[in-house]
Structure formats: C-alpha cells, structure tokens
Image 1 (cartoon, rainbow, N blue to C red):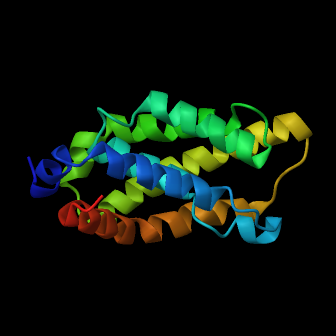
Image 2 (cartoon, rainbow, N blue to C red):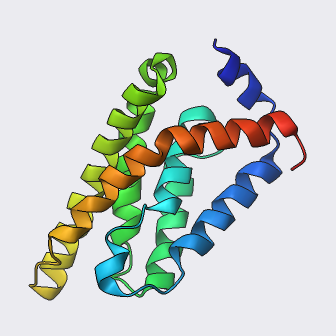
Length: 165
C-alpha cells in the first residue's frame, strides 16, 4: 500500500462529494461549441480520480448517475455520457492496482486511453442519433485532460492533506 493510498483511505466523503459537484458545475457552464472541445472533461477526470483512489465510494454506479446528470445538463441524448463514463471507469477499475504503482506520467497515459474511449463512445452515439460527425476538435479534450492529470492529482492530495473539507 502506498502513502497516497493510505491517505485516501481516510479521506472524508464530503471532499469526494464537493469535488464531484464542483466538476459537474464546471462541465455544465455553457461554452460555445468550437471551444468546448478544447476543455478537459472535468466530471470524467474527477470520477476517474476517485474511482482510482476510492473505488468503494465512486464506481460504475456513481459514474452512471453522474453521466445522466451531465446528459440532462448538456441536453444530449439520455444515457450518452452515462455509457461513456461507465466504460472509462471500467477501464480504470480493471487496471487500478497497476495504476497505483505508476508514476503520474504513466497514470496520465492510462487516463488518456480511458478518456479517448469515452470520447469515441460519445462520437459514435452522437453520430447514430444525429447522422452527423461532431468534428475532430472533440478528440483534443483527452489530450488536455491527460496533461492536467498530474496537476489534478497533486491538488487533490493537497486537499486531502489539509483535511479542511
């Protein structure tokens, strides 16, 4: 067990809930479509973070609920984000023990793969529902999210160490 793993064992549920709510609010801010593809998927990143470090609190069921909330908030077909987020969390849960031993760089590569899978599912579902390709700019978000993964991990560790939340 790593130091990070033992620290997250004592993380309060309030921190988990507040971080997921903050990520949902960031994802639900209305942004013009050309810019939306360049932003990281905050809810997905936070869900993946907690499913990696606290799988007993955030797992596939929570991913489903958060995905439905994102679907309602963004006005996308019901279940689109839920399906994509479930697939991404499943990849993380299957590789959880290996990922906890990785450095932040290798964790970011695994996060990139799961977020790319999530984006592919979103594009495919959108294509079948509207018969239009959404564009290539949507595939930029997993790159940016993977680049921000080490910062997110360090920030969440800082919040867990401070124990104010």
